[in-house]
Length: 276
Image (cartoon, rainbow, N blue to C red):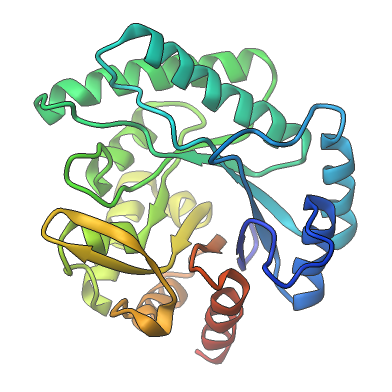
């Protein structure tokens, strides 16, 4: 990726009609450069329609990412749920790849009351299976476990970076709002944002900063972490300092707005970033 692109988590609210193809065109008309395919409830694009989505993205010069379904737990105590979770990630990656997608992100799982080290081992094993299956299929899409918003969820920065170090085609999806909520209000200053970017560079090298999939939103949180998303200006997330840190570290890739007003905050971030 040659630059940092800003985009929406799903079809922009102002798009009409509200189809994926029209959403991609609308993203481009707004002056944004990316859109995330939201498979969070279901994988809603068929193999037959995927080439049309790819064509729309190429013609509109829009980079596509994908968010796999919420119903994923690679550390479930039930084998059937792990099998289903692996299937959901693989199917999301396959469809996203057919659409020309750049990366697929997901919440990897829960600790289930286990020691984090034990949960890590199980999730790593299952992610390795996913990565190997995609490689055999010739699918080079980036597989991205996401930093999560609650302490009960697997996915702090160190865990995600370690997986990225140890597995092929695995890189982080860094959700800065989630980490802010997970730590009950910490990670909200320039130095704290910079410390995350420094950790990425230390563990993954410059390529880690030049191949980023980022989520940003305002967020409501409490002692147990994330409650719900907010618009940036209605939240305490210090997004201007976050953008400054991304600029200073020469981060490249995609920044996806997950705010309720998705395109407004994507445009806001692009505007603020452009003035830095």
